[in-house]
Length: 348
Image (tube, rainbow, N blue to C red; front, side):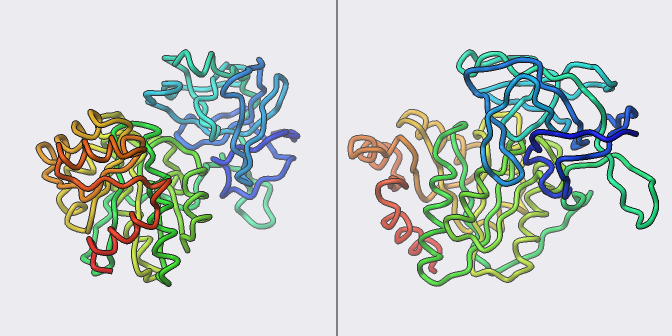
């Protein structure tokens, strides 16, 4: 055990109350969410920032000592990587996302360049036993994910937001819905259910007026998958209910077809029975058509609304409404209209 000064603490460690000086150990627990101290070995001109525990984005430079968390990522746009089988001091890992997830990079999207390479310095230690110098490996989480979370019936309206892929406008739609109902005097809770650990989206939901906002990484899950995604949604819905809000809004990160477990959620009848309305986000009319077809034919879900870049102008909206028989409203330019339409849908 030794002392280590760090330059930046990634948002994956937001719940661990860490300072700029931490204690580290050469004995490393190779487990999802385990916090490591690493040294950055290269510079990058693109995709070169890190989300800090404050929520700010900070540029990463060669030589920076940062704290991140072990995990994996299966992104369509960005880096794809896996957890190592074991980790030792001086091993090299890569930073897989802006939130500070560390793993072994398998695939690179040319738009973001090669990833940051990092040298492992040690595992972050926490000292939970008052008056004792017994350190244990730190895990980035607020609480543990239940192994078998039940879901209870509720009269609280729940709006689910899914997309055809990453960057389809899901968070913009989530914020538009949250903001509208907040202005109507309702208490709205929100969460992000799938993807890879990054707090940016739930911070945006809080800025839009969500009284309470959570993400799967609050439970030590750095990246969701088909096995854990349904349990995460059940857990977050039950957690959102505890403060008795007027409504709940949640976003499914990634797309309808992907590796983050969205399909497993949409197949879960207990979860679907709780959702009052579904919004689909799409980048173009063909994507909107495919998304609606997948939701209807594969998951027996009829989306009430299509938004995203496919609705950026009247041409896209006309195509969607005529071809798909689903209402199209743009969340950026017509947020109030979108909110009023959702009022009618859920009977708020």
